Image (cartoon, rainbow, N blue to C red; front, side, top):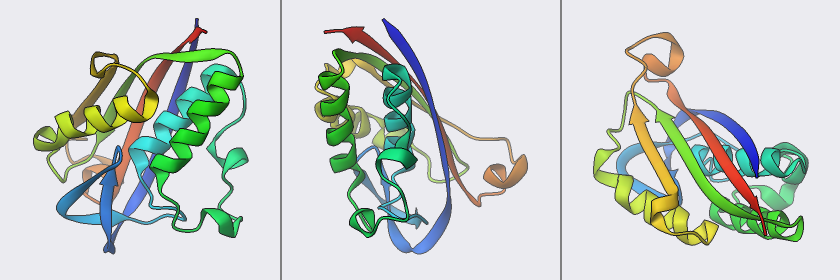
Length: 157
């Protein structure tokens, strides 16, 4: 078994839709980024790549490469899952914590877990997504953006 940790953060961008875990969250500003800025999927990608010791999101999908401009992060995750499998591993489970003052995630957690489970090729019971606030501390607590922490377990295939 291998364990990886992922982290990502993005500032809000009022001109974009909010994507979290491959699910569009209505009535909330999106996030600024080179791709679709799905901060949750980006943290999952880094956790998987870290567990397999095959780089990080920036080495696989650099923001200097125009191919990834506006990319669907779900497609990036599919590429990474295939690379993880090629390295001889399968996803055991992921545990992610989304930290933001807004939006409230509870209404969307089941849809996000379902989407991530599908993208990862695992049962929904292997995907944990929790929403937390930062109690109004720092920029995230001030509502400037969203950050995500994610742990991933890989098992030898």
